[in-house]
Image 1 (cartoon, rainbow, N blue to C red):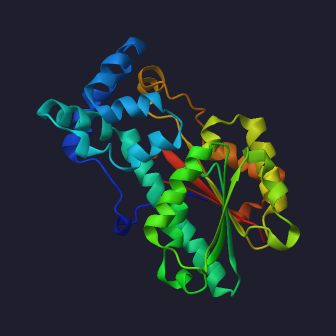
Image 2: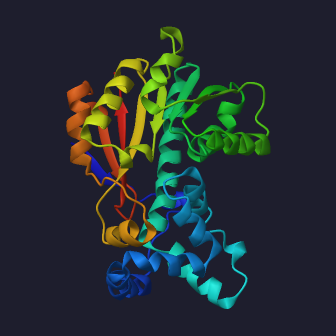
Length: 293
Protein backbone atom coordinates (compact mmCIF):
# COMPACT_ATOMS: atom_id res chain seq x y z
CA UNK A 1 0.00 0.00 0.00
CA UNK A 2 1.61 3.23 -1.20
CA UNK A 3 1.06 6.23 1.10
CA UNK A 4 2.89 9.57 0.94
CA UNK A 5 2.62 13.22 1.94
CA UNK A 6 2.80 15.70 -0.92
CA UNK A 7 5.44 18.39 -0.36
CA UNK A 8 5.33 20.14 -3.72
CA UNK A 9 6.10 23.75 -2.79
CA UNK A 10 5.37 24.92 -6.33
CA UNK A 11 1.58 24.70 -5.88
CA UNK A 12 1.38 27.02 -2.87
CA UNK A 13 0.47 24.70 -0.01
CA UNK A 14 -0.44 26.45 3.22
CA UNK A 15 1.60 25.45 6.26
CA UNK A 16 2.02 26.61 9.84
CA UNK A 17 4.91 28.73 10.98
CA UNK A 18 6.75 27.70 14.15
CA UNK A 19 4.89 30.44 16.01
CA UNK A 20 1.50 29.27 14.73
CA UNK A 21 2.33 25.66 15.61
CA UNK A 22 3.21 26.74 19.15
CA UNK A 23 0.04 28.85 19.39
CA UNK A 24 -2.06 25.86 18.27
CA UNK A 25 -0.83 23.78 21.21
CA UNK A 26 -2.74 26.16 23.48
CA UNK A 27 -5.45 27.27 21.08
CA UNK A 28 -6.81 23.94 19.79
CA UNK A 29 -7.47 22.42 23.26
CA UNK A 30 -9.38 25.60 24.11
CA UNK A 31 -11.50 25.32 20.94
CA UNK A 32 -12.29 21.71 21.78
CA UNK A 33 -13.52 22.70 25.23
CA UNK A 34 -16.14 25.04 23.80
CA UNK A 35 -19.71 23.72 24.20
CA UNK A 36 -22.10 23.47 21.26
CA UNK A 37 -23.88 26.53 22.68
CA UNK A 38 -20.85 28.60 21.62
CA UNK A 39 -22.01 28.24 18.02
CA UNK A 40 -24.11 31.40 18.30
CA UNK A 41 -21.11 33.40 19.51
CA UNK A 42 -18.94 32.16 16.64
CA UNK A 43 -21.64 33.04 14.10
CA UNK A 44 -21.80 36.59 15.43
CA UNK A 45 -18.06 37.21 15.14
CA UNK A 46 -17.94 37.32 11.33
CA UNK A 47 -20.36 37.09 8.41
CA UNK A 48 -18.31 34.36 6.75
CA UNK A 49 -18.22 32.29 9.93
CA UNK A 50 -22.01 32.55 10.12
CA UNK A 51 -22.37 31.44 6.50
CA UNK A 52 -20.05 28.47 6.96
CA UNK A 53 -21.98 27.27 10.00
CA UNK A 54 -25.41 27.82 8.46
CA UNK A 55 -24.39 26.27 5.13
CA UNK A 56 -22.17 23.50 6.53
CA UNK A 57 -21.59 20.53 4.18
CA UNK A 58 -22.73 22.51 1.11
CA UNK A 59 -20.76 23.91 -1.82
CA UNK A 60 -21.47 27.39 -0.46
CA UNK A 61 -19.56 26.73 2.77
CA UNK A 62 -16.69 25.03 0.94
CA UNK A 63 -16.38 27.98 -1.43
CA UNK A 64 -16.07 30.36 1.52
CA UNK A 65 -13.24 28.21 2.87
CA UNK A 66 -11.60 28.16 -0.57
CA UNK A 67 -11.79 31.97 -0.60
CA UNK A 68 -10.01 32.19 2.76
CA UNK A 69 -13.18 33.26 4.52
CA UNK A 70 -13.94 36.26 2.31
CA UNK A 71 -11.58 38.72 4.06
CA UNK A 72 -13.23 41.61 2.21
CA UNK A 73 -16.19 41.22 4.58
CA UNK A 74 -14.05 42.18 7.58
CA UNK A 75 -15.01 45.79 8.27
CA UNK A 76 -13.72 46.30 11.80
CA UNK A 77 -10.53 45.39 13.64
CA UNK A 78 -12.46 42.86 15.73
CA UNK A 79 -13.90 41.21 12.61
CA UNK A 80 -10.42 41.01 11.12
CA UNK A 81 -9.19 39.34 14.31
CA UNK A 82 -11.91 36.70 14.28
CA UNK A 83 -11.55 36.21 10.55
CA UNK A 84 -7.93 35.26 11.18
CA UNK A 85 -8.87 33.00 14.10
CA UNK A 86 -11.49 30.97 12.25
CA UNK A 87 -9.98 30.77 8.78
CA UNK A 88 -6.40 29.90 9.70
CA UNK A 89 -7.32 26.78 11.64
CA UNK A 90 -5.61 23.63 10.40
CA UNK A 91 -8.91 22.34 8.99
CA UNK A 92 -9.48 25.52 6.99
CA UNK A 93 -5.97 25.38 5.55
CA UNK A 94 -6.26 21.66 4.86
CA UNK A 95 -9.41 22.13 2.76
CA UNK A 96 -7.57 24.62 0.57
CA UNK A 97 -4.57 22.27 0.40
CA UNK A 98 -6.88 19.46 -0.68
CA UNK A 99 -8.10 21.65 -3.55
CA UNK A 100 -4.51 22.25 -4.65
CA UNK A 101 -3.62 18.56 -4.45
CA UNK A 102 -6.73 17.36 -6.30
CA UNK A 103 -6.24 19.97 -9.02
CA UNK A 104 -2.61 18.89 -9.45
CA UNK A 105 -3.54 15.22 -9.79
CA UNK A 106 -6.38 15.99 -12.18
CA UNK A 107 -3.93 17.87 -14.38
CA UNK A 108 -1.60 14.86 -14.29
CA UNK A 109 -4.43 12.54 -15.33
CA UNK A 110 -5.51 14.88 -18.12
CA UNK A 111 -1.92 15.08 -19.41
CA UNK A 112 -1.69 11.28 -19.61
CA UNK A 113 -4.87 11.03 -21.67
CA UNK A 114 -3.83 13.89 -23.93
CA UNK A 115 -0.49 12.19 -24.57
CA UNK A 116 -2.28 8.98 -25.55
CA UNK A 117 -4.45 10.86 -28.02
CA UNK A 118 -7.67 10.06 -26.20
CA UNK A 119 -10.55 12.48 -25.84
CA UNK A 120 -10.64 13.57 -22.20
CA UNK A 121 -13.98 12.60 -20.65
CA UNK A 122 -14.42 13.72 -17.05
CA UNK A 123 -17.18 12.98 -14.56
CA UNK A 124 -17.38 14.90 -11.29
CA UNK A 125 -19.77 13.26 -8.80
CA UNK A 126 -21.26 15.54 -6.12
CA UNK A 127 -19.52 18.24 -8.12
CA UNK A 128 -20.45 21.21 -5.93
CA UNK A 129 -18.79 24.33 -7.28
CA UNK A 130 -16.55 22.11 -9.48
CA UNK A 131 -13.60 24.36 -8.76
CA UNK A 132 -10.92 21.63 -8.92
CA UNK A 133 -12.26 20.37 -12.24
CA UNK A 134 -12.42 23.85 -13.71
CA UNK A 135 -8.96 24.79 -12.45
CA UNK A 136 -7.55 21.58 -13.94
CA UNK A 137 -9.27 21.82 -17.33
CA UNK A 138 -8.41 25.47 -17.88
CA UNK A 139 -4.94 24.56 -19.11
CA UNK A 140 -3.23 25.52 -22.35
CA UNK A 141 -2.69 22.05 -23.81
CA UNK A 142 -6.32 21.04 -23.27
CA UNK A 143 -7.81 24.21 -24.74
CA UNK A 144 -6.76 23.18 -28.23
CA UNK A 145 -8.71 19.90 -28.18
CA UNK A 146 -11.25 20.46 -25.40
CA UNK A 147 -12.92 17.87 -23.18
CA UNK A 148 -16.27 16.34 -22.31
CA UNK A 149 -17.11 17.23 -18.72
CA UNK A 150 -20.17 16.07 -16.76
CA UNK A 151 -21.07 17.57 -13.40
CA UNK A 152 -23.48 15.52 -11.28
CA UNK A 153 -24.95 16.95 -8.09
CA UNK A 154 -28.31 16.63 -6.38
CA UNK A 155 -28.33 20.36 -5.60
CA UNK A 156 -29.32 22.54 -8.60
CA UNK A 157 -27.83 25.58 -6.87
CA UNK A 158 -24.38 24.02 -7.11
CA UNK A 159 -24.79 23.76 -10.87
CA UNK A 160 -25.85 27.38 -11.12
CA UNK A 161 -22.66 28.34 -9.29
CA UNK A 162 -20.36 26.23 -11.49
CA UNK A 163 -22.04 27.56 -14.63
CA UNK A 164 -21.19 31.06 -13.44
CA UNK A 165 -17.54 30.09 -12.99
CA UNK A 166 -17.44 28.65 -16.51
CA UNK A 167 -18.97 31.78 -18.02
CA UNK A 168 -16.38 33.94 -16.26
CA UNK A 169 -13.51 31.93 -17.78
CA UNK A 170 -14.75 31.97 -21.39
CA UNK A 171 -14.11 28.34 -22.33
CA UNK A 172 -14.01 27.76 -26.09
CA UNK A 173 -16.36 25.61 -28.14
CA UNK A 174 -14.03 22.58 -27.92
CA UNK A 175 -15.36 21.93 -24.42
CA UNK A 176 -18.65 20.16 -23.87
CA UNK A 177 -20.17 20.68 -20.42
CA UNK A 178 -23.14 18.75 -19.11
CA UNK A 179 -24.97 19.21 -15.81
CA UNK A 180 -27.03 16.44 -14.22
CA UNK A 181 -29.24 16.84 -11.14
CA UNK A 182 -29.24 13.44 -9.44
CA UNK A 183 -27.74 11.45 -6.57
CA UNK A 184 -24.26 9.94 -6.74
CA UNK A 185 -25.25 6.29 -7.17
CA UNK A 186 -27.32 7.06 -10.26
CA UNK A 187 -24.42 8.34 -12.34
CA UNK A 188 -24.11 5.15 -14.51
CA UNK A 189 -27.52 5.90 -16.03
CA UNK A 190 -26.05 8.83 -17.94
CA UNK A 191 -23.23 7.03 -19.77
CA UNK A 192 -23.26 4.53 -22.60
CA UNK A 193 -20.29 2.21 -23.19
CA UNK A 194 -18.76 4.40 -25.90
CA UNK A 195 -19.03 7.48 -23.74
CA UNK A 196 -17.75 6.18 -20.42
CA UNK A 197 -15.62 8.68 -18.51
CA UNK A 198 -11.86 8.14 -18.35
CA UNK A 199 -11.47 10.41 -15.32
CA UNK A 200 -13.89 10.21 -12.39
CA UNK A 201 -13.56 12.64 -9.47
CA UNK A 202 -15.46 12.28 -6.21
CA UNK A 203 -14.02 14.68 -3.63
CA UNK A 204 -15.81 15.74 -0.45
CA UNK A 205 -18.80 13.41 -0.75
CA UNK A 206 -17.39 10.32 0.93
CA UNK A 207 -16.79 12.25 4.16
CA UNK A 208 -20.50 11.52 4.75
CA UNK A 209 -20.65 7.88 3.55
CA UNK A 210 -20.29 4.76 5.67
CA UNK A 211 -18.32 1.72 4.50
CA UNK A 212 -21.30 0.11 2.78
CA UNK A 213 -22.11 3.30 0.88
CA UNK A 214 -18.50 3.72 -0.22
CA UNK A 215 -18.30 0.13 -1.43
CA UNK A 216 -21.48 0.54 -3.47
CA UNK A 217 -20.14 3.70 -5.12
CA UNK A 218 -16.64 2.29 -5.68
CA UNK A 219 -18.22 -0.73 -7.38
CA UNK A 220 -20.10 1.54 -9.79
CA UNK A 221 -16.96 3.55 -10.47
CA UNK A 222 -14.91 0.44 -11.25
CA UNK A 223 -17.60 -0.92 -13.57
CA UNK A 224 -18.18 2.36 -15.40
CA UNK A 225 -14.68 3.81 -15.62
CA UNK A 226 -13.15 3.41 -19.05
CA UNK A 227 -10.23 0.99 -19.34
CA UNK A 228 -7.05 2.94 -18.66
CA UNK A 229 -9.03 5.52 -16.71
CA UNK A 230 -8.27 7.26 -13.40
CA UNK A 231 -10.44 7.57 -10.29
CA UNK A 232 -9.61 10.36 -7.84
CA UNK A 233 -11.38 10.56 -4.48
CA UNK A 234 -10.74 11.67 -0.91
CA UNK A 235 -11.72 11.60 2.74
CA UNK A 236 -11.07 13.52 5.92
CA UNK A 237 -8.94 11.91 8.65
CA UNK A 238 -9.35 12.17 12.41
CA UNK A 239 -7.46 15.24 13.64
CA UNK A 240 -7.01 17.43 16.76
CA UNK A 241 -9.74 19.91 15.71
CA UNK A 242 -12.41 17.27 15.16
CA UNK A 243 -14.32 17.97 18.38
CA UNK A 244 -14.59 21.71 17.62
CA UNK A 245 -15.64 21.11 14.01
CA UNK A 246 -18.34 18.66 15.11
CA UNK A 247 -19.71 20.33 18.23
CA UNK A 248 -19.37 24.05 17.59
CA UNK A 249 -19.35 24.36 13.80
CA UNK A 250 -21.91 21.54 13.55
CA UNK A 251 -20.14 19.92 10.60
CA UNK A 252 -20.57 16.18 11.10
CA UNK A 253 -18.41 13.83 9.05
CA UNK A 254 -17.31 10.20 9.04
CA UNK A 255 -13.54 10.20 9.52
CA UNK A 256 -11.56 7.46 7.76
CA UNK A 257 -8.02 6.35 6.99
CA UNK A 258 -6.31 5.40 3.71
CA UNK A 259 -6.37 1.80 4.93
CA UNK A 260 -10.17 1.89 4.92
CA UNK A 261 -10.29 3.00 1.28
CA UNK A 262 -7.56 0.56 0.28
CA UNK A 263 -9.53 -2.39 1.64
CA UNK A 264 -12.71 -1.38 -0.21
CA UNK A 265 -10.91 -0.53 -3.46
CA UNK A 266 -9.26 -3.95 -3.53
CA UNK A 267 -12.60 -5.64 -2.82
CA UNK A 268 -14.31 -4.01 -5.82
CA UNK A 269 -11.55 -4.90 -8.29
CA UNK A 270 -8.71 -2.36 -8.21
CA UNK A 271 -5.25 -3.92 -7.98
CA UNK A 272 -2.64 -3.09 -5.37
CA UNK A 273 -0.26 -1.56 -7.91
CA UNK A 274 -3.09 0.64 -9.27
CA UNK A 275 -3.66 2.41 -5.96
CA UNK A 276 -1.89 5.41 -4.47
CA UNK A 277 -2.74 7.44 -1.37
CA UNK A 278 -1.46 10.98 -0.84
CA UNK A 279 -1.94 13.31 2.12
CA UNK A 280 -1.93 17.08 1.87
CA UNK A 281 0.69 18.60 4.24
CA UNK A 282 -1.54 18.76 7.34
CA UNK A 283 -2.50 15.07 6.98
CA UNK A 284 -6.14 16.03 7.54
CA UNK A 285 -7.25 15.02 4.04
CA UNK A 286 -5.94 12.20 1.88
CA UNK A 287 -6.73 11.50 -1.73
CA UNK A 288 -6.84 8.09 -3.39
CA UNK A 289 -5.75 7.72 -7.00
CA UNK A 290 -6.91 4.49 -8.61
CA UNK A 291 -5.85 3.57 -12.14
CA UNK A 292 -7.94 0.98 -13.94
CA UNK A 293 -5.56 -1.02 -16.10
